[in-house]
Length: 582
Image 1 (cartoon, rainbow, N blue to C red):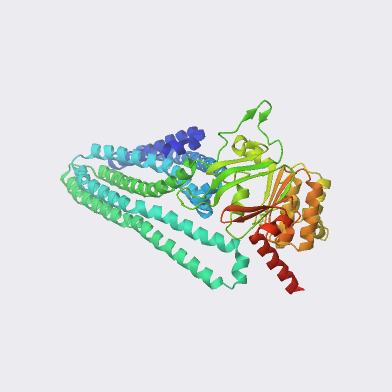
Image 2: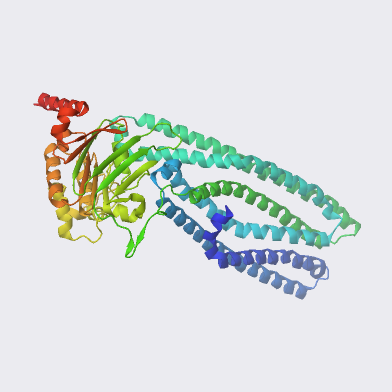
């Protein structure tokens, strides 16, 4: 973990060293104050020497001011180093997540990744800040005070032979117990975040099905689990304090008893006994601080393991096989697509293939329709083209070359995909459309909107393209959202355009207009259209019928009506539906 995490703290090494130095010096200056106080009692007061008392008093004030300045310096240095480390770690984790394939993200879950980016990183940066202060201050204070107290009275210091082993045993027992609990605590936090994320994302579905009570109960249960785990984890930590205080005050009572006898016998001066009380308090407080640091580190280690898991995860799809040409990375020459005996499954340990022995060739510029029932493999098939997933066997080629020959950036710049779940981002319509082409002009933006039939509702909006969409496009309908996503894809002018059931929320007339626009605006692009309606693909150059992860038939509409029972059944059922509606 240190090997993985330290590079993100290394830029702040000067601040870390400065914070450590300030904390150590602060502790030393604080330890000198009781010695000066002892001199005041044993010399100044005993001899009624007012000048001596004033000199020593001024020295105490000076030591206190120096300690204060060093404490402020340590606080500033620890804050800069801790916050900087947290920012670097968050950035590195976020950047690494951007390289993940879908399979990597599914391994962790979105809610868990959010927790690891926020909660877990916060715990680590807090640990760095606290350790710079306490992990230096407490040991320096402990060792120095122990040496000085032994110097005052070796006989009285025998009390520590009982106190120190007891304190060490308590810390060890609690550490063994809380380590697994803190790991469970972070997992319960993941589970709670998942419920919150799902509820807020799908709030319209929750309300439409009147499932608020069900969601409240889910949240209550996850919250209760988190509370119970937190109580067990922090309960074990909290019990550390009263146990240690019991030992601390017991030790002080013992020192009072034996030290008082020594003062009465004349073997120890009263001022030195007062100083000894100060040092023994500092020793025991330092031990408590060390124990609390260990408790904090137990949680930090659990968080660090989770962050390291993310940073150590190797993306399942990389550019390692990408080819370089004289003028840079290889770029698809055209939009032709070839599947050569392709097999695919989402989990390698699964025995069931999602796609089996797919072989087909699609010439550049053609329009291909894809039909099939739920679970037939339509989305899986087209997801292999931009390498959202990788084929387990066989090869997928775009522009006459295997997709692995291209960097993902170059391949996906040439392939535009409108997914089943239409995603818009917080911001204006213009900002969302410019994802397709950042340098697009006003005219190009409106041309893409007209092609997607989005101009019909955009012209009615007072702010037009500058209308704010809200979070995820909550202030536009499902059909409007689909058309905006299609416009964004058209604006990109890709060599391959994939529509994954992306016109399901628009009426048939609008669907027909969009298809006509494809023929004009993207005549050189290869267009793959997954649809549920036969009318959406009946004019395609090629129609693929899928069932059970295989292409069971391919051809044009007229051929399939004669040779493919599945296609015939779908067409007839839809025609009957139209007749009944009429």
